[in-house]
Every structure is written in structure tokens, then in C-alpha cells.
Length: 425
Image (tube, rainbow, N blue to C red):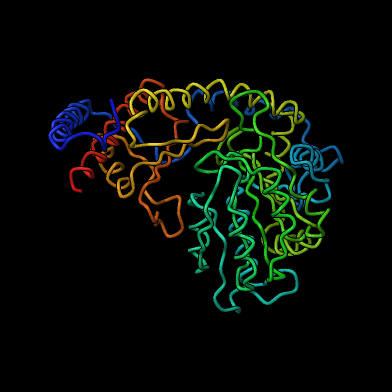
């Protein structure tokens, strides 16, 4: 079929009636599927069940330094878990703190710390007027929710396949009220882009006007590949060291989508100065995180080779789901001039772009037919997509049969919303 914009009004009206009838039939199937979040499916979770057996009542309960993991203490985590994350991230062990189950919690707490106590010897952000953050968008909705919670103004920075638009970002950080940036540098949420070497270099070389400017480097998908080794991400701390900007980056990572979401282990990597500030807060906040779980994960993974082997098993469950979505888009939407999409090599999301002004309509139509997607606009600060055209697809959780049905519904809804818009012109 030719592009929809070349169809006559009569042809569009006929297509509209056909699509309405098709959607009505979909509604009769009774499908009820929530694809609003990037959750692992049951098969994927099953790959980690040996984690539950890694530590039991007969196991050794001490870390390699002889510390009893059942007790209070070791604020920065057991040494073997620090070593595991050190090797995974590529940062020295002394620059790592191993924490609880949530990297989102680490990011929230760090922003809170900067708000109330400041960082780098600067005034707390809550005492500075008009604090702002640069926000690559589309981006991770929970980053934006954290900033919105603390009343931090957000500035859209367009995302490109190489990462945030660095020409715009380097101009924005010349404003001393701009205090930081959240980003997902590998397999970004939702587009699945990986920052290029040039982008990482330019970020490390930035000279923000604010001394207390911090890049929150959310490396959530560091080993979440679909095919072999996947994309390579330049190590940010190595480049920061070369530019004397080690204090500028706070990196977080977790095992939550390697093993069990909500029952994994998180870690934070930062410069010595930043870690000293964080430890000062942590010493008041907790007497120690869950070291039993830290040891359990070390025994399960053993080393980074074990992590990568485990993630290859998980890829066997993720890869066909992403391939199915791309196949459905290519078969149903290609050549019609109404949609474009990303085709990532890893991560958890695909970004679908529909005609301007149609995303919210597509999401609403899908909901009526039994498929709940992430709300349109969620990937932008304040939930406001300026073009109302981006939709985040999270294919990881549904069984393949239900996912196939959901994608048929989604494609029909994209077509219907697009035809409706053309008929309104």
C-alpha cells in the first residue's frame, strides 16, 4: 500500500470503517495485558531461581574478610561484592559502595542529599533559587518524577542515536543554575540508544558553570545484550579522570534485571570526594545494607564471566520478544508513512514514533482493546511530549502469544489514529 497521505478521502473513509470493525473484533477477545513497565517475564525470572539455593543454613555466613554477613556493619558492602561490581563497571573497588536492592533509591537519596546538604562544598540546592536539570528526552520517566518531586526545573535535551545533543547540552550547562543531568547511557530508556565514544568524551570534558553539577549515570542495562557482546560503552570515569572531572559523575548500577527486580543488589560508583559525602549520609541512614543478599549474589554469579553467561541465557527469552515486535511493525506499518521505530541491540524498550498528535490517541485505543501501554508523554519531563508522537513499548513480560495479539492491536490502533488525523485535515 502507498503512503496514507496519497490516499483519496474516499479511500481513507473506507479504511477507517475497516479499521474500526477490526478493532471492535479485537475488543471481543477479552485480552487484558499490562505492558506499561519493563518487567521481566516468568521464564526470565526462572533463570535466577538457583539464587535462592546459593545460601542456606549450612552455608558459610562470612565474607572473604571474615565478617559475619548476618550482623551490622560494612557500610560500603562486602569486599567480594565490591570486587564484582568493580570488574563489571571498570572502576576501582575503592570507588564503589554496594547498597540495597534499588538503584532508583540510590538516585533519589543522592538528589535528596544535594537538596538538603549540597555537594562539593556548595550551598544546598534547596537554598539556591531556580535549580534546574538537563533532561535527555525521550528518557526514563522515573528520573523525571524524582526531579519533579523535589521541584527541580527540567530542560529538554533532544536525544540522538549517539546520545544527548551535545551542542545543546554544552550550551545549557553554561547556566550556573543547571545542577545536573540524568541519563541512561547504554540501551537508553526508551529508544535503546548507546552513547557514542564522542558523546562520552564530550560529557567528560564539559565545564559546567555550576561547581556542584552532577551527571547521574544510570547504567541500568550494562550487560543486557540480545546479540553477543552488543554495544560497547566508553567508561565514563576513565574519560573524566583524563579531563580532571572525576567529581562530576555519580554512576549507579544494579542486578535487579539480572536476577530478581526488587531483590537484587545495587551499587554506586563515584570519586573519593563524592563517596565521602555519601558515606557520611549513609552512616546516619543505615548501619549496613543487606549483606546476606550481597553474598548470595556473589555465590550465584561467582564473577563477571558468570554474570555475562547468565545474561546470555536471559537474552534467549528477551530476543524473540523484541524480534516479534519489530516483525509486526515491519509487516503492518512499513511503507505507510505513519510510523517509525528503534531496533535496539539490548535493554528493555523500543520507541515507537507515530504522527504528531496521535500518541495519546493510540494509547487510549489500545487500552479500550485490552492492552495497557506506558502513558503517552511519560518519556518526557512533566509527562509532556511536545509532539505527542512517542510511545514506549515494553515487550519483556508478556508470553509470546499474548504479545503477538497485543502488537496486532497496537498496529491497528496506530493505523486508525493516523487515518483519523488525515481525515481531520
